[in-house]
Image 1 (cartoon, rainbow, N blue to C red):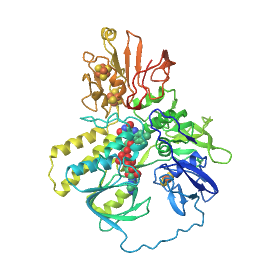
Image 2 (image 1 turned 135 degrees about the horizontal axis):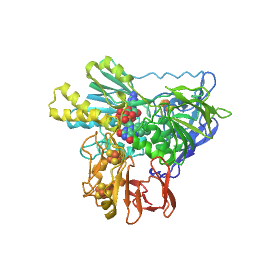
Image 3 (image 1 turned 90 degrees about the vertical axis):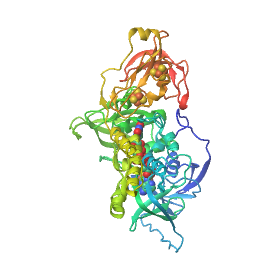
Image 4 (image 1 turned 135 degrees about the vertical axis):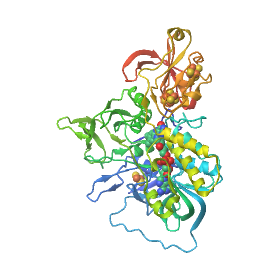
Length: 562
Ligand SMILES: Cc1cc2nc3c(=O)[nH]c(=O)nc-3n(C[C@H](O)[C@H](O)[C@H](O)COP(=O)(O)OP(=O)(O)OC[C@H]3O[C@@H](n4cnc5c(N)ncnc54)[C@H](O)[C@@H]3O)c2cc1C
Ligand code: SF4
Ligand code: SF4
Ligand code: FES
């Protein structure tokens, strides 16, 4: 377990430490960070044991599964979401533990009243709040985290968005999270978990810091609770060192704790690509990304970013077994095999050794339990939004959140321009489109244009819901009218300023100045000036050598010219 000391993207705050006791030893934790991070940084990764005595660690990392429950100052707490602040003692829950019931006294419970209650302060819930507020509909948002933004808080990469006016596209996830809620945070109840929906349209909450129970009485309920990681079954899948992407990513990007430095990633979807890429930014090496399907699942521009780093992507391979260390407190390797329809082919097994973490990125499952219960309590006045109903991208979460706000307004008989609803609905449908290949090769300008001025080449060959590049060009030279088209550069308008290189969330725009023999690349790693480096193609194959020269440091990004 490693504390991240340097990072090219994250601001690592000045550290203040607190101490607590863990089973007879003093553990130091960083103020504001979780108990889970403090224990992991101290090498204490076993938090509980199964009934047969097997070691257990974190499972979801985002407060949803209960696997990390421990006794914190005598109370059962989920250590992945409980901060070290004010904590004196942490210990494993004894097998015979019985919680002490504390009688509740009459009159101590707060009851909020509102028109719409939104469970989940991620992009879907916050977009719904914004639109409801614009329509003048009272609402309350409840989220069990200490800050708004949901999954976006743990994402350090720039986001794809297809927008009419640029709002979020090209921003980093954690920056979007900060802006989604706006300046006025009234009506957002943080650190509160909704634990049940009761008769009479009553929502039961518990504050995870103060343990205070309260209720919301609402006419309408929006469930925007996001998703939970999907964990496939394989031998030793419970051993510490096998972590879902949610755990790995949250610990890395929010808790600044790297759970392993030699990583095997399972799943070649966007989450597999991005967590692998982010792990490299944090100082890890990725041995391989394996994928059970016979093709990669994620977006092609995201696949290119990891291939360029030389990470092998092995399709038609499944994980059969994690190889634990001697005392089952970590992993040292994994057995994988070629597969057909996810079934391992006997005799093709091979060992991936010298790893210390297996990063499971095999997808997400909608967290829709409250949605199901909501249907019996709220009848037709319940709505699902974001990953809770359909696993998707930030754009679709935001658009579905807005669409729900219009649907609530309609139910309430509040008038609004119906075409606004239709437009949001159209954009929502477009946003769910899978990338469709439209070009075989990137477009390039004529030989004369190449020789005359610097120019850019856009390696974005698929149509999908993304367009920040179109806002990046001060000359208006880049256009992409629909999600079913690819960006086009008008080389008569392009002056070769290279500003678009810096703004593509897929790192797919490259610049060239043939007169000076210079290439402009988006680089999200610390770049040493004057260093000789290899240039590679989208498959990581070496195609040349250049010397680095940093160009911009916009958005906390080191950018380089080679
Ligand atoms: C690694 C990774 C990379 C991604 N990259 C991109 C990308 O480049 N572009 C893109 O557009 N999208 C991307 N996504 C997808 C995007 O993050 C999600 O689609 C989006 O966050 C879904 O928003 P949401 O509001 O539905 O859910 P979430 O963001 O998960 O928010 C749900 C919130 O509800 C809270 N909650 C749940 N249950 C309760 C309860 N009972 N009580 C109180 N609060 C509760 C949760 O704690 C959470 O804060 C990525 C996702 C991952 C994991
Ligand atoms: S290089 Fe400058 S002018 Fe040319 S497309 Fe990019 S941003 Fe526009
Ligand atoms: S080039 Fe492609 S990936 Fe990059 S901003 Fe434009 S549409 Fe998005
Ligand atoms: S609740 Fe903490 S690991 Fe799932």
